[in-house]
Length: 209
Image (cartoon, rainbow, N blue to C red; front, side):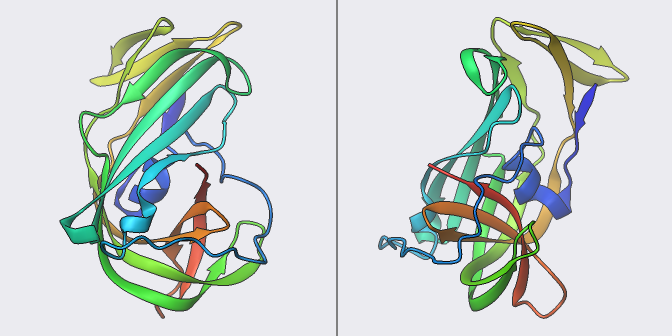
């Protein structure tokens, strides 16, 4: 059985890749392209639907809506399982939360922050820093390939593919943690602080439109 962990320190990273999907598009991003900054608050530019990388049969999408004058983001997460590997064929299971899975509240902008990629490369960029609060809600799946059972008081979701199946169990994410967001070359990067200086971050996920 595949267990999907979540917790306060990983509210952004986990909930934006709820099925353990891998870190978005490849490439170092050495030459950033300018991203438009719409009026209406510091976080307004992040609005839209963002896609995680395909993870075998599953892909996550995150719909981001700005609130509170552009100082708050409401993040709604959807997980889809496809009949075929590579996220192709029919969608056999769709997982949703009853409301926004994460609320991100802006606190400051860090200019010229040091951003470390999973490859070990470091780039410089501006980061919008804030508090990410996980809702603690439980995901629920529907679809032609879905069944479930209760094990030790927890829901285990069984999902059938065209060839094979998987069982997944989602741990609830609760609490609040520090995190950051930035746009680079048309991607949305989620980052977490590295050290105590407040100017260094690690990339946790890279999402695309």
